[in-house]
Image 1 (cartoon, rainbow, N blue to C red):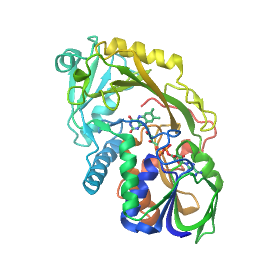
Image 2: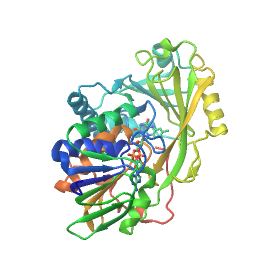
Image 3: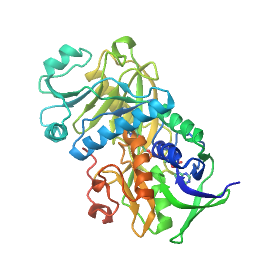
Length: 388
Ligand SMILES: Cc1cc2nc3c(=O)[nH]c(=O)nc-3n(C[C@H](O)[C@H](O)[C@H](O)COP(=O)(O)OP(=O)(O)OC[C@H]3O[C@@H](n4cnc5c(N)ncnc54)[C@H](O)[C@@H]3O)c2cc1C
């Protein structure tokens, strides 16, 4: 069995499977991906039918990155011969005195040349009568927003990585890593491998992986949940009729058209308790479910029906909610990505950039906002600002 590789990827969730695909295109059989559970498992942050993809973001850096994210998915789609991203358009709602400033979004999109519409409640109700809005609500509409079908995207990354010759090993947990400076040794429950470059894409397990390098980041892992409601008239809420949406207030809710299940999906952003990857449960929290049900009934009375199911999932949050995409201090051949609870739309791109960063030493995107040694990540107990 081959034991030496150019690159090893620790963790094959959304970002790791993206890295496996992009590195596979370049290095083929010289890439190994290691996943501690079965590929496609539901214990991490990247499963379920859908994630929102959007250009509408709160900083120009994210808007610019999102533009590149669409390009990365488009390349994958062509390469795989499979269409993935479903364009629905997207609405960001801002009630009066919203906790999240709308100007962050409008200014960032304007700075990046992204077109958007600023709509009154009446204009939204006219175009999408499914939404029941009071007159104090205003909205940004951006036409490129839509659905990244998460589980399918991961499966396509995996299929294509394997087609390029990448070895992906499941049920194999990385238990130790040593970096000698010229070679990295990766030890698992099943074997020992050597590589020149290592990518850490460990999601909620990131700090365990970083501990092999004496590093610890002030990450917060939360147990999130999404709920599907049995929509009485699903055609009215089909992706061709109904956009993805985000309620930009505290609490912040977001939702999807009917996609993957027989009803709309709604969730609260950062609505769950702090957990660890070990202490988390798979039991939906009833208070969270009730909050989401009440909100859905108010905003989308025609889409609301008995809950079909709720699914739990983990966010791995940095205190400023910004990503980490960087090489490790003193270990230039090791790179890490942390998705901060909003990275699925970027999963393919981040996988690509991580590979570029660690192998070429420079990535084809501005990653200066996502440094691992930024001041807030060096604090033991930093102020947490998850609402963006
Ligand atoms: C409910 C919910 C809704 C979301 N909505 C959106 C959205 O609408 N839009 C959006 O863009 N993003 C969204 N996100 C965020 C996005 O899904 C995540 O940021 C992203 O999927 C995280 O991917 P990841 O690869 O970092 O982590 P994961 O997918 O969790 O992958 C990490 C993998 O590493 C493996 N691993 C860890 N340690 C080891 C080890 N030692 N050895 C081997 N394997 C290991 C794990 O088993 C796991 O498979 C949402 C997340 C959740 C939970």
